[in-house]
Image (cartoon, rainbow, N blue to C red):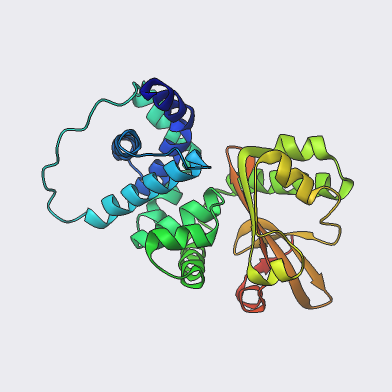
Length: 280
């Protein structure tokens, strides 16, 4: 049983380390957070956990948040952790990891409050719904949205133009495949663990609140997005459907490693009104 658990953990290791690195900005600390996730997994009964990847992501996020909050305070000794599955790590890998995020973005992320950083990283980079993030930071979903929004305003304009352009190309391709009803093209653009979520207003219009997996999300968007126009939303690639001057629905995309990892459908009038929109 432990061998099966270790194998399952190994399958998610790269994803978990990516989350931890974006939270902490340090490969060594990211490895520590992932090690702690293994420790907690090995001691927990996960027989009733439907989405183990989501469970592990939450654990790594909580551990990383605690590490961020502890920075600047004197570290206290901890018990030695049991050995986790082996991982090869070295300077070359760390350089690749840093380049994939962007040093400029890491510098800005370091200026954010821990809860703001967690909300931005989990939602904008990995597509985790706000209601799940809210449970981690002990705030309401609305307050958690505000955390991410504040972080987004500070991040906008910091990412290298080439990175924003590459994300924009992915979003444009997604919108084109959606309009054309090209299911296979949509699946190819989606991360296998992609999550699509909708706020209350969008759900009232018929959007499904929570859809997971590439095939399910591709079915959700196939043949749709007919009236949505590509736009920068708070400086990040997305799409907006408007009737005249009235904003109706916005689509935010989390793009990771060239694939769509999350889509958020937003129809709440207050958030739409505050959103920075630039058609390009």
